[in-house]
Every structure is written in C-alpha cells, then in structure tokens.
Amino acid sequence: MDIEALTLSILENNLAWLLLAVLVIILIVKSVKIVPQSEQHVVERFGRLRAVLGPGINMIVPFIDRIAHKISILERQLPTASQDAITRDNVLTQVDTSVFYRITEPEKTVYRIRDVDSAISTTVAGIVRAEIGKMDLDEVQANRNSLIDTIKSTVEQAVDDWGIEVTRAEILDVNLDAATRAAMMQQLNAERARRAQVTEAEGSKRAVELAADAELYASEQTAKARRVLADAEAYATQVVATAINENGLEAAQYQIALKQVEAVGKMSSGAGNQTIVVPAEALAAFGDAFKLLKGRS
Image (cartoon, rainbow, N blue to C red):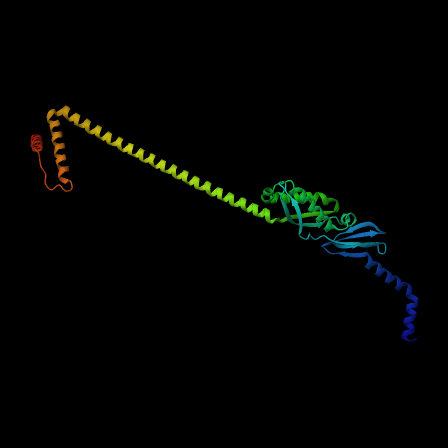
C-alpha cells in the first residue's frame, strides 16, 4: 500500500474527528474576544443588548452573540464652536466654546442618541445663550470662571441620560462687534482720565496736608523754644532776685554795670564800627564794675 492510499484511508476513517476538531477551533476563536484597554464593546444577541465587554479577555456565544459596537472610552474634544449670545444689557457677543467629554456607559450612548458630538454641541450652545442672557457684559468678562462652572454642571445634567461624562468646558473667547468695542474703548479712556484726575487731586490734597503739618510742627517747636527761653529768663531773674536779697544794693549795681559793659562790647563788635564813642555814663559804669569786683576780691 502506497502513501497516498494510506493517507486516504486515515482521512476516511477519522474525517468526522477532524471536522469536529476544526469546528472546536473555530468555536474557540469566535467565542474569545480581546478588548483593548481604551475600548468597550457592546454585544447584541438576536438584535438585543446582551452585555458590555470591558478591557481584557471576554467570552461570548459564537454565532449567537455579536460585537455590535466598539466604543472608545478615551476623552474627546468637540471642535471649537461659535455662537451668538445677547447679554442682559443687550450687547451682542460671539462666544467661542470647547467641551471635553468621555463615554462612561456605552449601552446608553449607542441606544439613546445617534450623533453624540452634534447633540452635545447643540446643548452647549443653548446653555451658553441662556446663561449669558442672565448677565451683563461686564459680569461675563469678570466672572468667566464661574460662568464656565455653571455651563459645565448644566451640560452634565443634560447629557446624563446619554452615558456621557463632561470633563471640561472652556470659554475660549468673547468677541464683540466693532461699534461695541469702540464704545468700550471710549469708556475705558474716560475711566482712565477720571482716575488720573482723582489721583492728581488726592496728591494736591496730601501736599496741602503735609504743608499744614509742617507749619504746625514749626509753630510747636517755636513755642517750645520760647517756653525754654522764658524758663531761662525766669530762672535768671530768680537768681538775681536771690542775690539782691542776700547782698543788697551792691549786687543790683553789679548786674547793671555788667549789662552796660556787655552792651558796649556788642556795639564795638558790629560791622563798620571803627570808632567807638563811650559816653560818660559808660565810663562810670566801668568804674563801678571795677570797684565792685575789687570790693568782692
């Protein structure tokens, strides 16, 4: 028996087993599904939702179950959208927004909404118009962070039934028409001019206050100096009075003579006084002073 005949004999006798082995292999290949980490697979059985397969190795019933949808669970960014909105003070604005989201429940997303991106964009546009309509233009510019938080929370509530999580919402820009920008620029320039005038007036007021403080300080110091001089004069007078009380008329004459001598000395030290005329009373005062000094010594 040659090799070909032997092979045919083996195949005829074991054909059923071979077919069974091939079928088992096919069933195993069809039943084992490997899902990537970034995806979730929606399984249908006879057209109805059967299960949602997570990342890793999963088993399904071959030829009965099928992978109907492969959903990426990575975070997505909607294209930047621009929509017109009117503020509470009737200013037309063009708002550029962007939203980031991810699918958390694929079974809701595939069976409750057809076009996720379009639905979210429409929802965001309506919410932005509604929220900006509640605010003045200045509030929109100043409270952008709170506006973003409000938009994000409102969008999350609106898309909750779609199995979507909104991770971020951004207002990229708030654009105004040319007439509004020109009016705002005029208002800004007027405000800057007003602030400059206020600053200048406050500076002038402060300068006057400082000058008044300086004058008051100078007056206080002058008064203190006069008080010190008065105290010194009073002390000197008290000393002279004590000396007169103790030594009698001679002490008074001595003091008068000294004052006359000091006066003559001041006259002689003045500028341009080359010749000094000494009156007789002055000579007598000198003599009295020397007599008193001689008497004391």
